[in-house]
Amino acid sequence: MDRRDDAPECPNARVIDTAFTWGDDRPPRVPWHDTIIYELHVKGFTQLHSDIPSHLRGTYAGLATDPAIEYLKRLGVTAVELMPVHAFVDERRLVEKKLRNYWGYNSIGFFAPDMRYAAPAWSMNSSRWSSGCTRPASR
Image (cartoon, rainbow, N blue to C red; front, side):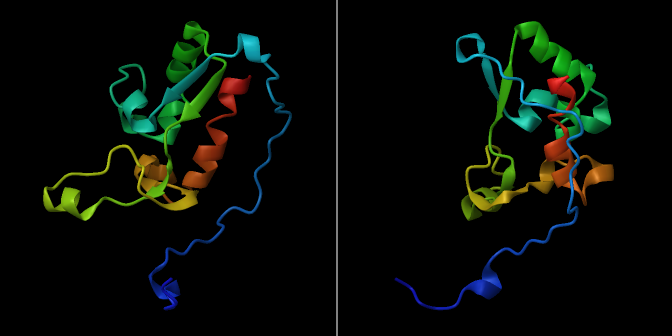
């Protein structure tokens, strides 16, 4: 075990919004035998969807748009499982090839939403989008 102090190299985080009001939202309580789970990648699902406004494609906000939600509802989806959306890094070998880590499986902050999925106007508050994007679908 390496006992050196690596705190200076570790990612830091701060809470920028101490409250999130869920309002009258409640768990959907769909029975398991009626549950249809759709696993999706935020960018992959929204990037090429022509009905999502172009400035929101590839973002948490794009996932919360009516066209995205209506599509999932038309499929009969009752729950969405997001592929990794937490902060992650691009591996050195990818960076050297001018590539990016698309899937997000190299996590550095499990409770920090990755900023690359934030819409420009919300880039400093992606936690609001990552929490708030679930609200429209539950109504």
